[in-house]
Length: 305
Image (cartoon, rainbow, N blue to C red; front, top):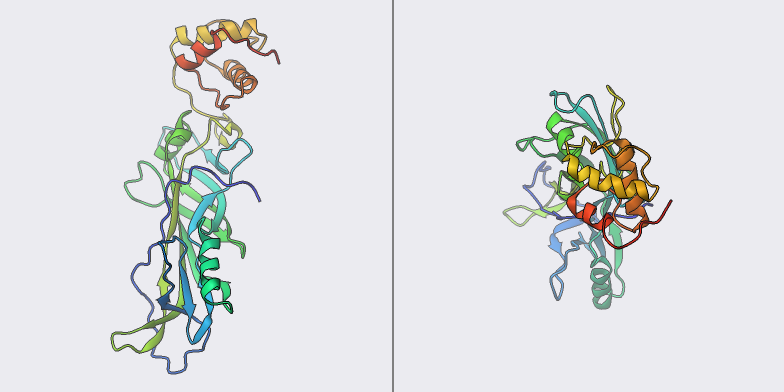
């Protein structure tokens, strides 16, 4: 399985209102998760663990960390297909990742086993689930989920329709530098709770697990494409000609840039910048900047490719 992103910005694991109350169960089978018996630890841990109903040695562990898969470049495994960004058209976003466990997962299990050597652990499976995707400029509205699936190992794939404003933000060269996408997984679990009279009954409880991450058109340009114009990659703004000339000239001398020193940013200049960044072990995003120009024109030599 691909490596996980390092910039998971937040984790949510919130129990919300209890829903779907069943009729009173006089005969609740042993071995169901008991939501009123959450395990307490000697120090605060992020991993939620619940005991089973009428089984003191069975423990249910709930996944509570959401992470997107990462491409070899380090960018999130995210694809955007759009019409013409900036003309009010919808776009389609696909992403994949995994619902897993907090870093203290093993510590939580070890502490339980030290107190209960007969402990048995089960990952709680949801009776149903949903995904939602929130994007910038959506005014709190969710993207429209066209399809979502998750397998027994917690790996998921989501395909959603997003607003044009989302396309415009994700197509910014610097979009990977800030949080642009929020993904929320909403599992629903069936288990035991006690009513106001203290009588155990079977109910369902919805939870949520979420994360935020940046887009990556600059880091994985081939995954951001217009089906109308066939343009691939970011929608670059107009850069000052002086800046581009100061980048083009030394890159041309180094044999990395084959075009003219005209101060116009285009695919050949972007390719040359990427080649330079690769030669210097820099983050490869193809974005021109004055900082990059100073570095290229500095005393270090540019390796010929």
